[in-house]
Length: 289
Length: 278
Ligand code: SF4
Ligand code: SF4
Ligand code: SF4
Ligand code: SF4
Image 1 (cartoon, chains in turn green, purple):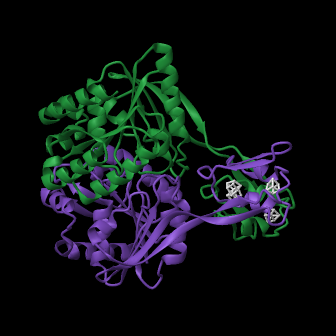
Image 2 (tube, rainbow over the protein chains, first blue to last red):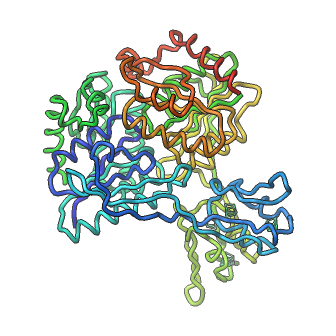
Image 3 (tube, each protein chain N blue to C red):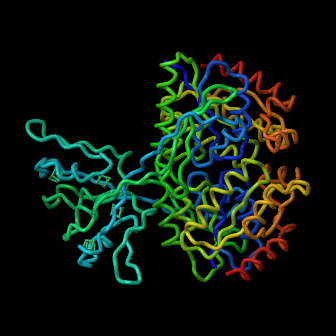
């Protein structure tokens, strides 16, 4: 089994991509997974060459056959997701975006007017990058981010790593603490949480930490832009130590980073301060894996 | 008037913009719909007056009267129920899979065998931050989806007599759709980076699909960087405001104290532009 390293951040924008892309640059023998299907950023920095593409099936959605519908209103009353409405012509219809695919309306409809229809909610890809193979995905706007797509791309990466005997999988995780993140961290060997020295940073770290604990996944923390507020950085690191998280390192605030990203360069390549920090973090992480 | 603030990804300054906007209004209600990672309270520092547990209904089976017919399990599209008939006579419920749809209760033929009971999923906090009415949703850690929590915030807590600021989750998935559905105007907050632009395009696709009125606020704006400007011009999307890149704001953000007063007039100007557009 290859070892899976996951990078997450609670909320976005803490510099997760700075760290993930830099790790992608230094780490050898790995497959990259971009599990942030909502806002997949890794492909921008790694200029991947598409090798394979597939559609991803979402949960089927209810559709009402207006020719069969007898306007009894039962489905609209029963639907707990407020997905059934009446259009100006008096016809019942399902709002596909709101439909949660529970099938209750279909079960209940006395006229058998409701069926479930297959929909595609995104795409996933395998691509060649200068840093190894990458499995990534795109969710169509408005589609349900159920975590299934994340599970799917991670699974695909594991299959390839078995076939080609690749020892590591590097996962760029999704933000938040909901379903997609749960799918991102389940099965990980080690989770790196990228935090920042802000009130939000500590608040989100606490929540993400509890999530890791409930999945019994070992985790460590990296404080990005640490010198913006060294007091908060200390608080974050103290919190981490107290909670049994590994303190993996600090990345300084460097105006070179946004500039590098604007120029589509990986911060590790472009910024000396990032290179120094990431080299240390990388060494510590590899010990944990 | 209802204004939602969202962004293609998190950390683009959505909370900064939302709270500054709320602060600059005369009669505002601020609702933090980013229930997975709500951050608005860290800056507005509201006095919380009420904390209401938010629950969703889940089934509870009374095995003494259940006939183990299995209809509930068949009806559950999420495979959250398992029923084993003779000779085991057992039911199992996996609450992390349950979406609280009510299908099992609807189909159960035995009166009282399957009842629905509330399960805590998160909480709603209501309070005041100076002149701002404050509401936030908070999803409990380990819960899968905040969509229904957001729907409840909007249905039961939104005050139509106020100017409502909805701080939306980031991204383009269902929680965002739930938040921005039916608002008068959507503000998309974007940073002038290649990521920012790529995420912004997805958000634009979404709000256009939903037929909503919208504009852009550029955060961390730098004079010599026209990444977002060029795109907005090409697509004829109005740029409502440019919040400059400054280590000052980053520093004060990091201390949990945003310079509300300093930007008050600027954001009054933003509101004016929005009023002219709707
Ligand atoms: S339950 Fe069936 S017949 Fe009744 S309104 Fe809905 S679709 Fe029409
Ligand atoms: S399948 Fe469920 S969520 Fe979808 S419309 Fe029917 S009752 Fe509503
Ligand atoms: S449908 Fe009702 S009676 Fe049948 S197995 Fe389920 S709970 Fe028991
Ligand atoms: S409420 Fe819906 S999801 Fe939950 S167990 Fe019943 S049928 Fe399944």
